[in-house]
Figure 1 (cartoon, rainbow, N blue to C red):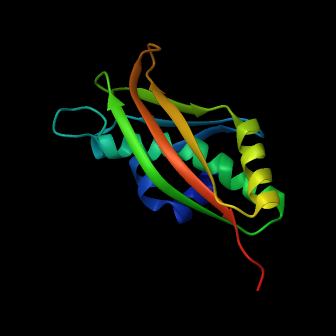
Figure 2 (cartoon, rainbow, N blue to C red; figure 1 turned 180 degrees about the horizontal axis):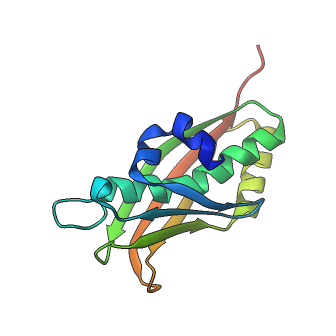
Amino acid sequence: MRNNLSFFVLPLAWISGVRVDTLNEDNCTVRVKHRWINQNPFKSLYWAVQGMAAEMPGGVLLQNKIKKSGHSIAMLLIGTSSVFTKKAIGKILFTYDKGKDLDKLVFDAVTTKLAQTITIKTKGIDEKGDVVCEFSFQWSIKARSKP
């Protein structure tokens, strides 16, 4: 997903300032900067904006792996949890760097024809290198049956 396309795919994330910073085969980094439009009443980054930014690295990478496989595979978020440890101000980065795990997940879904699940964890890191939040997203994928 390129930044020029994310407006049409995820307009709320775009408006909130969530942007894909880097994307390759094995990792994805997403950034968001605290601004007036995405802040909460406490003058920090609203938790839902952090959630959108935290979900995107793993979700985009998984989506790319599914597309590259050439198979019709359903993808569904089935659970999430979060912990907030510091006021989120400035630029926050979220990274997922376990693309190899996603390759195995997609392979297993295709070969077994059974639903596969994975928990993707991301941390929000501020400009000082401090962790401001931690998110966990549980994804399920399953190869679709051919009609």
